[in-house]
Length: 125
Image (tube, rainbow, N blue to C red):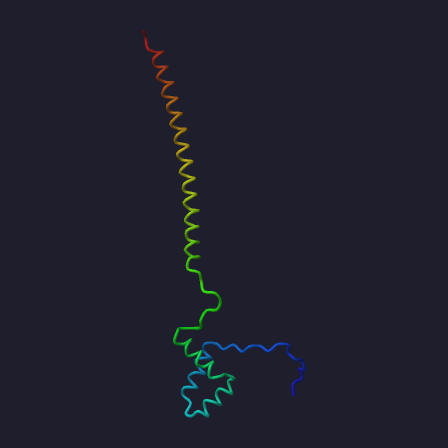
């Protein structure tokens, strides 16, 4: 008799790995009679509906994902937001470059006009 007398408050759900599912399905399919199949299901603690679900999963390539289906527009929105931020940074750099070039142009014009005025003054009359 077991020395552990604690009663579990909640029954735990049995989780089958993919290898266990494949093994149980193979045994079920190779059973000679319906009595052998029934004893296998009792021994493993599974129902026939569970076996049919496993067959569907196997045919589809794995268990179905749970939860809400992914929103196809959400991925596109995230990509567009990322691209927008990238383009905003690029525009900001371009505007700073144009502003710097405008200042450099104005400075060069000022220097050029100042040097032409000095050249006229230094010419002999």
